[in-house]
Image 1: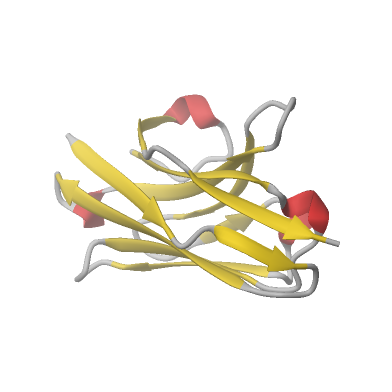
Image 2: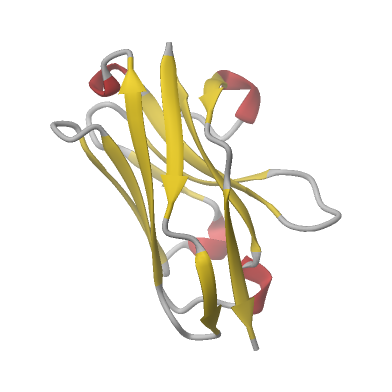
Length: 121
């Protein structure tokens, strides 16, 4: 069983940057595909980015060119570098672990508690 803990959220002005981290413990991190999802107030949780065990990446269209997902298999940590942030990026961001890279949240079996990102205009 994997335990996931996000950090790095906060408040930033539009155009700024934040780097989210997700520390994994428990089962071997390298075995899991990892993803980032987000949930804005009053909206459904949505896919942001994912990375496979061998480094293949997926992004939702709205963050392509601005966000970069990466993983440190030795350290058991997932990252999301967020640049050129926009107010519409404001949400609680969750990391998740699953057996395969996917955009569908139901395919991820382990979730962190979330970290708040707020982007002001």
